[in-house]
Length: 461
Image 1 (cartoon, one colour):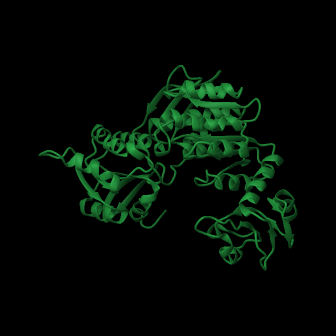
Image 2 (cartoon, rainbow, N blue to C red):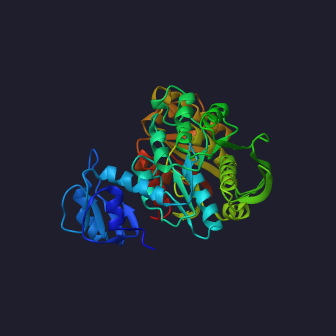
Image 3 (cartoon, rainbow, N blue to C red):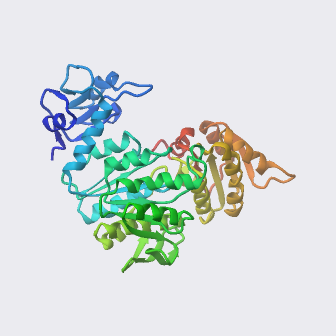
């Protein structure tokens, strides 16, 4: 089914069409273009998409949105970024899908992907979601513009690092259901405290359609604040969490040696027993948020339970790999995409719960922590000790203070090395590698620790 015709696009964005074409996808990165895509030539601070129109066409683009005339089929507009917003609005206007927005300080992408698997199974392939972590002021409109008109469900991840951003994104998405996964000190550099972070996250409720539902974490210390924000928008409220007082909660969790869990859950007025393939208490909470959203959407809870059992780990966000590297059998925990104090704590705990001959952690610095950076990095020591980590490689300037802390005293608290970048970290690990290691790789994305994962997996992403 054609996603858009050039006539539909031109009407939606108020542009002047040069050449008829149809598209089945939308992209603003010429490297992601495939056959019959629409290419948006966006202008940024450091790049201009018009320089890559030829590459996009070579890669298969059937048309482009530009602010200057080109020799191939295109639609001419004054502002290509505004045009992307307009196409997103038209996509939202034309659909009858149930729209779900997901935000939070951690767990956004995993929850979005799990919810997609749940709803895609029950709708027999009629669910749509934002890909990767396209959750900002251009990624969210792009994800909306990509949504097929006949979708039954649309799931959109929304992120922020400043007040006001989620208000704007939610106004575009206009979700029927809005999920806040958790509140934690991510991006705290831009906020006074967690209360301000919670207020910024609660902006998602302002765009929820009349009669919509807010899904909020009961176990959060900011629960009452989030609840009041939902009440102010006259939304239905479903709480989720490990507490028995939550509307959606786990009555019993039985964990297996492989990290999976068997969960007996209460989902408002229904109960469900399901298996969860992903390891960690945070994933139990994520799955409960998913079940709350499936319930609110009136979708099939049994199908959602089957999807939770079948879900694979996400690259950079919890995927596990059994690998052979230089003759050594290793278990690799890939958390290389991002890190904040909350996610660092839960993933190190997950490492501690994993049976191993030796536990190794390669940890990269956490960004955007402002004046509290030293405090949050030093707190990692207690998590490492509790998890009985045997060897840790710390990467980045911000990790120097933790390395000093671990190496203090006559006997180091934990065997520890420090380096500046991913390449050096990999070299250090190769010198210290042991057969049977379980190795956690986690850090903020700017450090590129994903390259370590790729090298350990023999070049695979």
